[in-house]
Length: 329
Image (cartoon, rainbow, N blue to C red; front, side, top):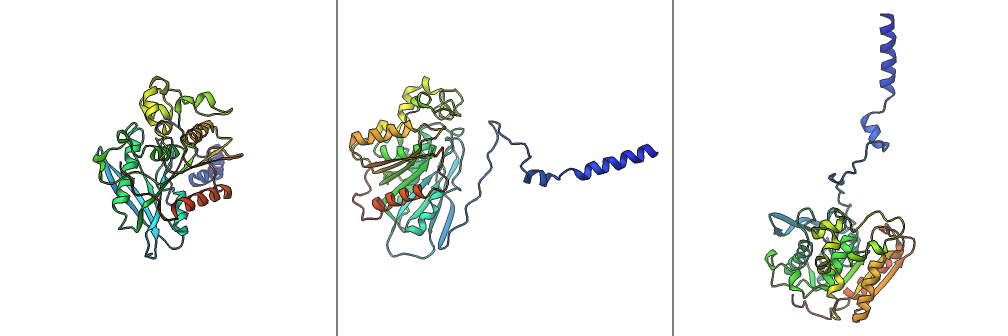
């Protein structure tokens, strides 16, 4: 009995010294779930800035039984004049991400209405579903411009990574019927935009691995890469599909102004991708700015230089009186 009593005392002491599950989680010791089928943590919406109100989860279309939704941010106080609109398109490799994290939210206090949209991800549908959805969202917003005091002739789009690719494609394929699906609604409206803010978006997928920097984490030519999942197979085996989703394919002189930003240490999307787009826009005579963010990787976080570039560009393009009508799809 004496030995059993001593063993019980030792066991109790050991158990008492172990951290609780809550403590383990807080200390970052919980195993990381990094498997391919794991679900990334859902980011909660940011707190609203003063004077801003939100209308969340508005259905703008339904595709293959999937409800496509957007969040709309407007000033609490009504303004007599319609405001320009900036539409945020999230990144995530076309297979993840959500509309809840919206860096453009701060623009409401600068005189804009802001929308953040979701679109079908690659496990739900392959390309061109993603651009179909983005264009449907633009058409919905134009159709409801009067309800939300939006100026339908002053719509800008802004996105990062996969979202950067989609906003660039919105900018260059405004009149391409092949990349629009009228059945998603409001076919009478245009999906053209007046300004594009592209943060490190892919363009010519076939050149990504050839120009990948040292330390690149993704093999884009692999059969299970984000790009392969988007097009439905290894990208080098489907060059026509890849060309169809390349914004450069559709560049024409009447494209809207572009702001392109890319970090020179981006190991996920090579900076060469943005250089290709900037060169194509220059050749076509499209107004554009291309800024290299020195020392930045795949993401800029809170960078005053980046904010200044965005604010200056959007104000210059969208705040003056619109110079063009809505256009035709």
